[in-house]
Image (cartoon, rainbow, N blue to C red; front, side, top):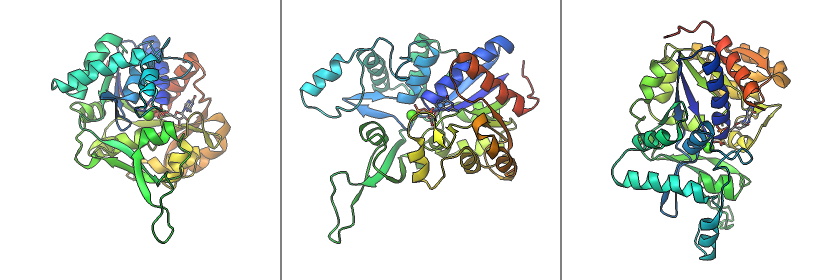
Amino acid sequence: MRITVLAGGIGGARFLRGLSALLDREYPGSEITVIGNTGDDIWVHGLRVCPDLDTVMYTLGSGISEERGWGREGETFTVKDELASYGVEPSWFGLGDKDIATHLVRTQSLASGYTLTQVTGALCEHWQPGVRLLPMSDDRAETHVIVDDPSGATAPDGTPLRTAIHFQEWWIRYRASLPAHGFALVGIDTAKPGPDVIDAIMSADLVLFPPSNPVVSIGTILQVPGIADAVRTTPAPVVGVSPIVGGAPVRGMADACLTAIGIQTSAAAVAAHYGARASGGLIDAWLVDSTDAAEVPAIEALGIRCLAVPAMMTDIAATADIAAACLAIAGPVPASQ
Ligand code: GDP
Ligand code: CA
């Protein structure tokens, strides 16, 4: 079976760990292709950092800090502290010493002319995540957030001036507490999907949206020209898992992202935002947590098959069960092996 997953960072990576365990057990020989979000990517102190790709790579390669959910286990922050003592910014970005080695390899390889897809492939040779990890694009397309100028600057008539800050600054430095007026994906219009990305969607037996952020993870991937059309038209069923449980994100500040684009923070509202493939949308089926069982009829009324299951990824076994529910609701998937 060939499964293609559009993934952000922590939510995507944790889901992939359960999916991998399920396939190893029940469908040996299956292949997982991950289309990773690179909208979070940022230059920090001259290093190219790809937070979501690295979270997937470290999580599946058993190098992640389980406690933080990002970065390396047993990490130290000596370089970060030294940089702070020089007073250089950004001081708010969590650059760990071990992590820096990954960014050095990536930055040097990019400078030598390799594409991000090639560099990610080379890093994965080391990490052996057990999936094919493809950046959504080799082109730079970075998420910026439109906010009122944090300095408090106003126009002569007293209205706050708006400015765009990098997503990482909004997310980490301000913990998404500055109300967002919207997102600007700088470079997205001319970004091309990575070399095998469209084929991975079109030739899959099943396409999955893990419980990743629908706006700044999956939403970003879908804005790369051509990717949403591929999801709409692939012969494979498309199944998603809600990242919203009981009207709130399980972790992180996805509610602030949804509010910024005028979507309610509920499992049903996210399903409606993706829309039914039967009417030109992106998903055939949607899993919600058992606590949101009351939302199932409203989601089914949209033309999206829906089931309430325990959707908390508490451990690998529970996550494998969520993945199994995805396969079940997808219906008979033409197994390529
Ligand atoms: P990020 O890039 O690191 O922010 O990670 P993702 O975009 O891949 O995933 C973030 C989303 O995962 C958040 O909106 C969370 O609500 C969701 N999430 C985290 N843990 C769980 C869980 O156990 N169950 C479900 N259903 N969603 C989760
Ligand atoms: Ca992310």
